[in-house]
Length: 431
Picture (tube, one colour):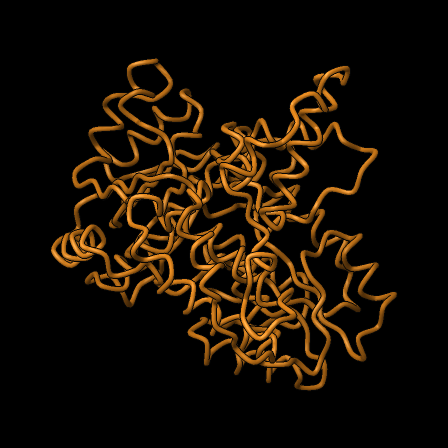
């Protein structure tokens, strides 16, 4: 992860920097907002920003949005000041980190926001074949398409491929194509020249140029608008780009990894994805296996997650009860590894027994779901039932919207549009 620190705070950011470096992050520090934008506009991007709460966070985040720069900001301040924390979150900060920083707390925030995770994927025969294929193809420069349901670990495997490649010492840049609106994504990918459109107050280096020499991950590439796919195809095919509003041709030397939770062949057949782009990306395809097809991995992975979240929360690790194991083995895990991790995280925090019981897991088996009284729905408005289902699913997923959308069978954009209409309720924070 690439971390940018904005501020001084009497050396306490230095401690945060050392903690981040010990966790494998690459850290840069500047003293003010102007210096930060000079870095961000010129290809020295970041995955996360730590910012002194006394700086003008709202102005900074507003300018990020204006310049189409998509980076999460964590505010930092002394004494766990509640007012500072509230104001920072209102200004758009993703989290508030009290200083001096606690090592476990800062590690948890880094992981939650950057979505980085260790490769915990099991040892089943099906996964052994995937590991073998990755070891074979990682050293090459071939484009790779990783497909699989939401929550199967596509981004984690992408990072693993980069780490095993000959580009491992270079940058790994990730773009979540589903999370960035269509009108901003072109600038995010290709950059822009000053004055090329309203809000382009300075030149901006895009992700293609920023990742030159390394690896570019186009996460959920199936969400890119068909019109932008033509420019994306040219960039991948010709290995060159031009910034929006610019005439200069920029040569590229990078590896492309793309992921999708959709059937891209079906998307091509239905006219939503370009066939030529599909073939350019699909030099090598890695199909990740859903958790329900390799249930022998569930208990082993669960025990690793128990150790991880018990340590993170200063709680003594508890074993899974036999009844809990039975419930977990019967459950289909529509959200895959991400849902399993969320479930275990919640269970570690909620468990009050000597063992983790089914009650702490808070899972509903198929039998329990089918026994719900369907007559309870009669007489209710469709929009109200839909709203309750969406909010309940989002709560179950600890606010993770990608995971919730997968369970609901809708796109992440459809989910966001529906949530925007629910102004009368508190929406669970996005994980």
